Length: 75
Image 1: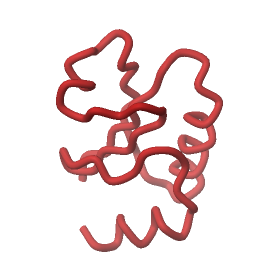
Image 2: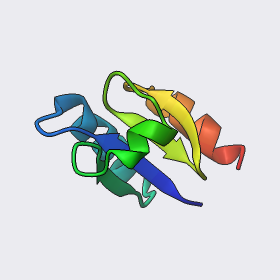
Image 3: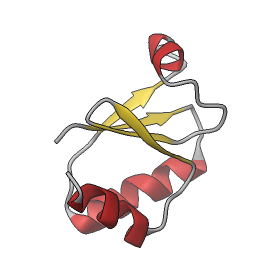
C-alpha cells in the first residue's frame, strides 16, 4: 500500500495526520507540494493535508483515526 501525505510548509494539521499514521503503525511518504507542484496538477487540493492512498486522493484535511483505519482496511 502506498500512502502519501501532501503538505505545505508550516502545516500544523499535517503533523496531526502524520501522528495518526505513526500511532496506527502505517508508513507513509510526505510530499511538500510547494516543491512538487506536479502533485497539485494530479490532486487539486486547496487545503493541506491531502492524503493519497494507492494514487487516489482519499482525504483532504484531518480525518478521524476511525475514518482512516476504515479506509485502510478496505484496501
